Image 1 (cartoon, helix red, strand yellow):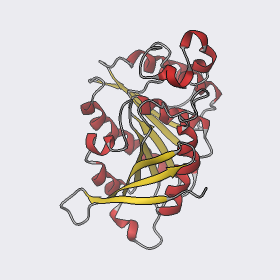
Image 2 (tube, one colour):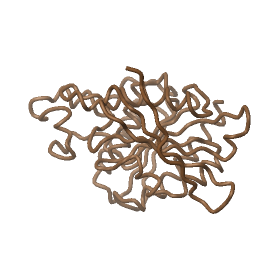
Image 3 (tube, one colour):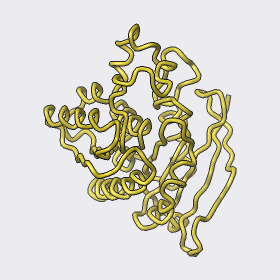
Length: 272
């Protein structure tokens, strides 16, 4: 069935006439069997004929929605203009962890994002349609998703990040609905092992993916992020790793996203 796309809302989040445009779009997904909303922020200059932009995909955390990022970091509209990037924040469901569940056919967010959302954005917005002009990152569950999707789809993403990411959720087998997507940990260890970032990085070669990871020193995911950093070092995979004061909070992510966007901007500038 042909996908139906509708633009639901167009907002301007600044009194400045040069503000970036913030759209909320709705995509009818064959993989999710429902419509799914996404926020898309385009620079003011996107209306300039012939100008195209790299894209940063921002993923929300457990229990969040497509609208979380623009609320956590309202400066994103200004940053899209200043950095010359399109910012896309899709809906990842309450607890999808951004993979395709082997036991629940309604949890297919990996396929939705890579096979439906990305092609739609490239078709309807002035993007630079190549991997070196695409980055993906997110907070918490979305931090896991940013690394997960990029590592599994190196043909689509050239850079990736994680903010306070659940990069290894096996220490938390009863949290955040993970067992709804992968089954009980005790009887499905192989599924859990094959869907955590800390194991997926073993298939990476150095410089295949530009990586930035950060986590607050008071965050409950701090140790798994330290473990990821150590493993990347052992594998001799170049990456940026940062620990800052802060916990698992909007204040931390409001600050963190500024640094990650600058990292991606530098990557785009040297690869496009």
